[in-house]
Image (cartoon, rainbow, N blue to C red; front, side, top):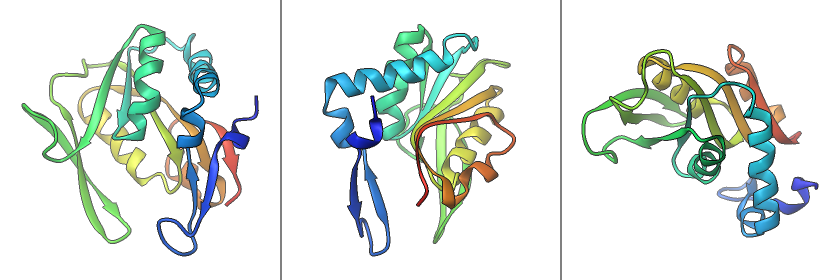
Length: 172
């Protein structure tokens, strides 16, 4: 099944010059959503995964069903102030400023084998921050999985210390 055919391209969104990859057209189709989840699960089923971690919001879309299928837990990564209780945080740079991501302090056991899942790899900055957060919490990042990779943007280079897997690639 060609997943690329199910991803809508929206030119000049959210601003001029951006070619937005819209996954809502893929996830609204039950057969294609199931195929996508199964693809990620098949890739991970023999990798001895302890936890799936996903950043809000689209990391939740793919991360939770993959965790369910593997029989492991899911840990959400949220922006600062969105999680109750004690958290661990990491700051990271954005194009114009900084942001902060958090996880609950007690969710990742020392040495846990963690896979981070998100919808799209572009610059890699957010996922690098998520990986730093997992490491800070005591986890071992064993792989980063993305539905889509924008190859020319070069996020894979920033994440070169990790195994990176993407299922649909665009050269823009």
